[in-house]
Image 1: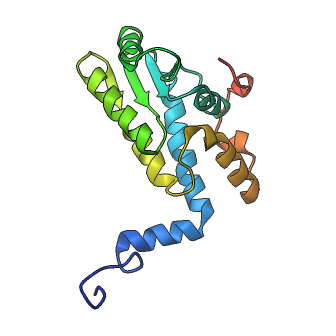
Image 2: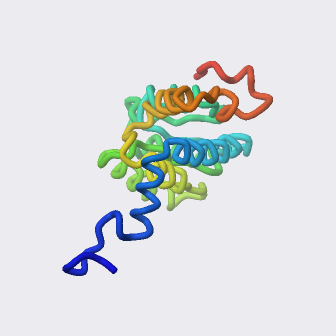
Length: 176
């Protein structure tokens, strides 16, 4: 039963208890991140799949975590509509991975508006699930590699063995 006035606090709901358990156990959050990131890396193998990030540091972070497919950078001196048009012309599927802050949310919505009219498949699910997995720990995509590396070190797990898929040893260095 909820509190005195019918309000359920974070400890009294099922979601709140799960969140608190995960917050106490960094291993659970890291395992969820690794599973999700490995699925994302598998998407890079599909021809025509691109990922969209906000800036150059975000691009470097996803490259360091093993993404080998095309990366479109939004803040690169051209309009969002021009970036979206280039994606429509060069991709079949676009995974939006903007930051998990207000500006990133606005960019994701605007990209959705531009891309839904075209023939390209749009994926916002990875952005949403990563936000849920990293809740409160990370706001910017550029910090993703550092967070994963620090968490792996704390847990005594080599990051390269869990994030970069087997057979990709040559792709571990950041590339453009």
